Length: 189
Image 1 (cartoon, rainbow, N blue to C red):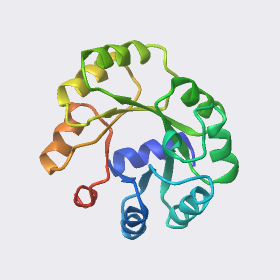
Image 2: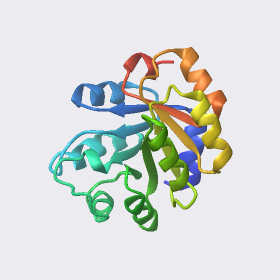
Image 3: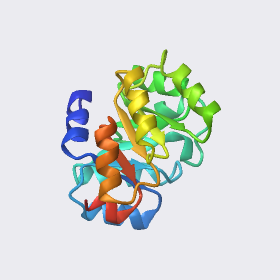
């Protein structure tokens, strides 16, 4: 799947299903939503998780930092590309994200904003980052999203702690192209 078609899907269906266990996987397989962030698994089961999702025509992006058995090496993306049908990766490591892009994978750089220092570090990082999208957590900070949007042309995904339709709308209106959530009720919005 091309990067362009993936981003069209973000705009068409801005609620991304974040899967953290098999229960989430089963619900995702029944859902009409098109995009899934896989936030769990190990080297043995990951290919099967992705295969099930792809069989339902889902766009699958794997959080390589959370897959048991993958190290923090840039080669995690090589494993994902070679042994799964995933469309992309998520990582908190800028070097891993840049390498995944070179492999032709969609690459999402995830940032946790928990204080002013982490926010300043993110602002410095996005000046030179090579990513298809950035994900900001927690996602319930419209002002941070709005300010980040002014600083970069990289599409923004907001994730974490978004639970209401109003929060989804505020986040999108602040400049995020999509939100990611493991909350099943949010998937249905």
